Length: 489
View 1 (cartoon, rainbow, N blue to C red):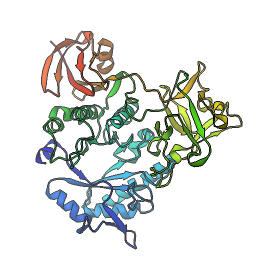
View 2: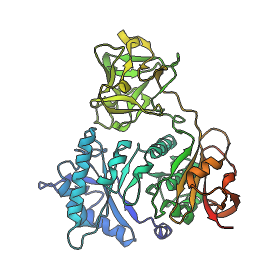
View 3: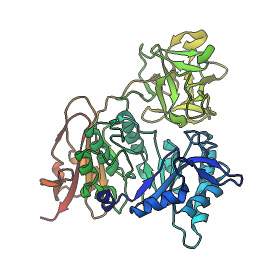
View 4: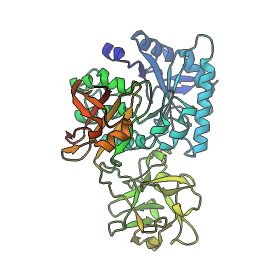
């Protein structure tokens, strides 16, 4: 652990499951079986090992695991955390309203409670981490906390890719004091279960460095593989992540990487016979819009992303143990041939973006939100046509074809970082040509520059900026990260 401390991994954070109950006065009480010494004892144990301690809560009435949430108890909880010496608070979004303004207000309440509690003499400042799973926190995140989750729980590789795509949308919202958080760095659990491969762990770390994400390890340190340990402790990768300019990397070549995993995003695409939908209006599936393969439209994590997911009728979702509103829809309008498609969660409508990806947005009756769902009348199957496209487009779960990306990031000393990623099933050769390098750096094409492979920690040669970068060949789920430095010779 000392190696991780020396490298800058200073927080040891508890996630869901530590809270047990509340006292009559509202004070949060840790689970007595797990924490017989209380919260302060946990903090002291972490401090004695050199770590700063963090805890978990939820802006709703309960946590995702059913423990006490902070809604209505923000002042009580903030005072308890600060009194115990806690320096990091993650606040989740289960059992809470999906309405944007309500979410902002609840997070602001906890923000203010933590600020007030930590302003007492001798109190430590608290890093406040919002966990709302959605891109719509990006533009307002810096006003509410120090980091904000911009996507789903990344419990497997497909979700890692979803969150990389989310970071691509929000680079402008991240900077010193407030950071886009694409979730945790995955490896093996304490029981040895591999959530992603070793190569995927390395690729994830390189991309987290590129987008200036918080580096939070969600895996066992004691049985970590040598490759993962060497990657997470690599000072040159960490230096790019922690660069003091704080500018998040941007995607400059390629499009969304998602759709290669199990939960493809909903999008509009050229209409075809493959886009056959059915509106289930009776029985257990009332209001579900699905395909013949038992795949339904789903509001991912009760946020704003819309994906294809198994049509569930048991097991519960993030809006409660028996709530399936994130899978339910109704067609709103006097005529199904020109109607809105509204989520069962709130008055939010299916809304295609400029890149064709569909998200939820407040219903406004605009042409952007109008669909022709008349083919689904009476339980029939057929396409759902988007009326916002003069050329014709349909609701689709088609996967995008992009499997490679190039990302770039300017650094404080004038250098640039360039990341390459391949998520396709075969090796791919990727090159950042002169236009690509110019977009990243803005340098004079007559300059020379040196290339350093920060993973291998070795220099690979010199280039003329106007000639672009040499190509790199990457295997499946592999990435490369280079540091480019201009020279005067």
